[in-house]
Length: 87
Image 1 (cartoon, one colour):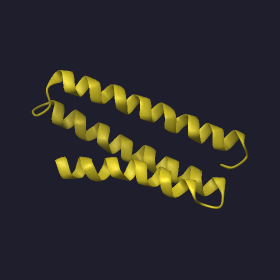
Image 2 (tube, one colour):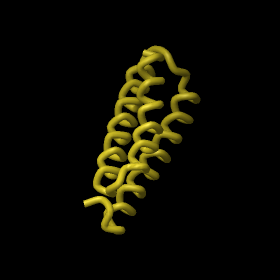
Image 3 (tube, rainbow, N blue to C red):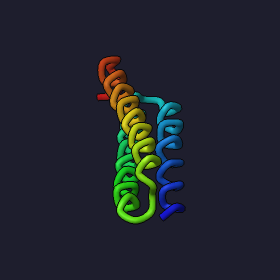
């Protein structure tokens, strides 16, 4: 599970980076949405791990960080949409 979490975490950052160098905002938006999917994967794995692996304090800290990343990704997508680059 740890390796799967690492891959998903790397995927979030990598998709944002790759999308940022694409020629169109529509492509960038698609990569940002893929990053959101990877974040959802991380959140699901943390919920599963919470049942038997992760101490409660660490889980709450991770949830807070994931929520912040989700907010930033939604803002990025909204910014791309309002700038006419996302649709």
